[in-house]
Figure 1 (tube, rainbow over the protein chains, first blue to last red):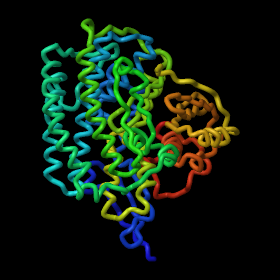
Figure 2: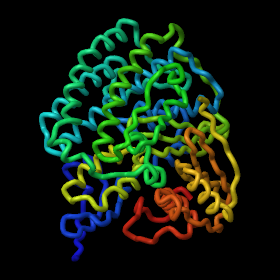
Figure 3: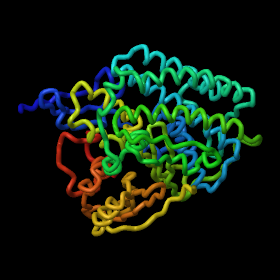
Figure 4: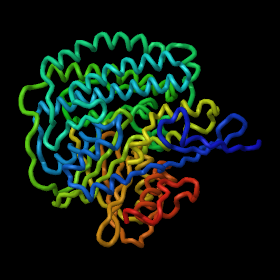
Length: 358
Length: 111
């Protein structure tokens, strides 16, 4: 059969960020996808060796808008590990709460984008309406909607008082109830299921070989969540790892929805258990040594490698973002798919090209 | 669960065999990256079995050729290409498709 190459992106309505795929088609069926990105690579890893390690924290936060908090926190965790300092317990709980608020707004953003991709405008609006309340909480507690800048090497820069925390939890009941109705549409509605069920299957073995991480991996039946490593206050908090054996796009949706409810559960526990006390301990001097940090960002496991030689600049800073790791899984699920499903399949990995183009 | 990372050294000659065995045991390739050293590179291959992470460190000279492991872990191709484009690490066996370029840069900016 005659093959046609259809260029997809870097400018495309479903892709707010630039990634390009050459889709090789036989009629309407994709037989191969050849990726091309790097259009906006910013050389941020290299920049770390030219900036003061304290100042660089504010650069790290700008790797990505949606994962901004997580990037900042992970950088601080790495630096704290090199310095060998233990931050105050209250700071660990505050970091955990902000991490989960980030996960909530990221997953709700994804649900909205997914709904938009299959043309369900009302579902898109409702997802983002609920997300807005989470962003309000982030803004109230940090001063910024996306770039929070509350992390410091040695703790956090802002505290949340009892009243604020109780106010957040008080809103959760209503939000959870609204989300239950909303997510029921994603999982049960026949028009939505028709677009997601058995579309873009990634088996458990392929998920390992092709480097899938995060919800993409857990939707292929792999029970792994780096929050269980116990960074921040996760070691003291009970939560379930949401997995699915569906391996398809619906399973990825199911996992992210499950994680939204787990995030509420984690924040509730953190608010109950948060101790009083300091939120920051001063860390002086220049770092010397190396550290590898893994954290569970909303899009999956991210790995940070930091190497310091006792000067004010890091010798090497490396960040492997979840999307970078999920690209090959995307290339695996595209062949065999219908051309019309391509935007949807790209979205199911929850791509963040800003992170990838660090 | 402690967030500890084990480190081990590995040579270019045994890399491929080690990775084959790791893949057969169900280990994940988490990432690969290069660090610049005074006379060459330090390559770090991070693999994980469950939550257990091992950083395999390989110290090589500028001229050393390292075999690609993309035949074992397809996702390795992106990491290898990144090292080749940004650092100039000589990886042999990366599928040579000129369309799959990562950074479209001239030279090796992090060499």
